[in-house]
Amino acid sequence: MMMRILILAVLFVLSARSSVSAQAVIKILQFEKNTGIIDRGEQDGVRLGDVFEVNRYAGDFVYWVGRVEVILVKPKMAGIKLLEQAGDRAIQKGDVLEPRKREFDPMQEKLSQSIVPVENGASNNSSPQGQSEAQRPAPGLSGRRRALHFGLTLGLSQSLNRSSESLGQHLTLQIRDQENRLLDTIDMTHAYTTSTALQAFCTLPLSGQFSVNLNFAYLPLNVKGGVESELLDVGMMASASLMKINSSLNYRVNERWQIGVGVGLFLPQLTITGGGQSLTVSDRHFGIAAELAHFLPLGSRVWLKSMLEYDLFLDDGPSIQSLSIQTGPSFTIGRR
Image (cartoon, rainbow, N blue to C red; front, side, top):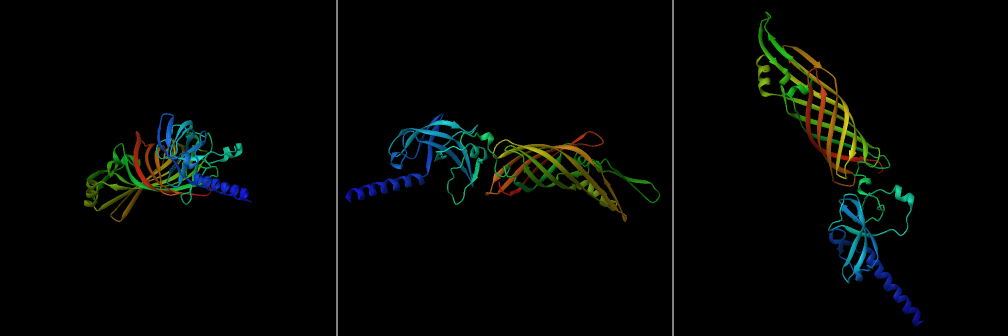
């Protein structure tokens, strides 16, 4: 009877110790080149030869960084060496060690996602083994379940050529009196300046790195003060806008940065009112657009997108260029 009680007591102590060790968070204290030190040791259940996956926590997501093996054990700390590293991402101080899966399932390896939401601050051990950073999708930008990514950005747009040529409007107003005598000439080609840019977009992932982006942009353009004064002096007003419908192919550089290039239809419109009459001039131009975007995670399904966009389309004259800087919220709908 005493022997049974002793055996049960030993098993209870070992179980409690194993439980504490399993729940303890192991972090990198120092890592240089291919070796480093962790903040747990023999007292926490770390043993020589143990293999751990190294993950990095960023908000509500976990990124797989690499795999290490314990090569030296002390009571309260241990030494590790690098076994495998994820692409260009280096292991650093603060990264978290988690036990490696004992069983390897090839199908699970293919289906596993590299970035996994974490609920209630609990760690997740489902990071794929041996998968490089270049193969890991960015938050909300890709996914095997074809989740849709929506967003709205707001910013400023400025033509890189003479300011109103980006409208495709080569228009000169001639102001005449009732006897058809020329009173004034106003060149509307250069009448507009830096304006607000509003864009709505929808992104559908194709793979871990590529996605298709459909977007609609609207720019209500501002009239220069000097031109506006000239128009008011003769009892006239002018307004203009530029709409763009664009489709682009995006490439994920890493979990935060994305580049894209596409084709679009540009729809400029200019309206002149005065003397009880109204004149509207509109046009259509095909062109290309290139984009550099940065995604800052705000939650498990919400990001702040900031982007720099370059537009190029053909006017009746030289090619017209414009540059936009925008930022705004974006979110994901659907299972990722």
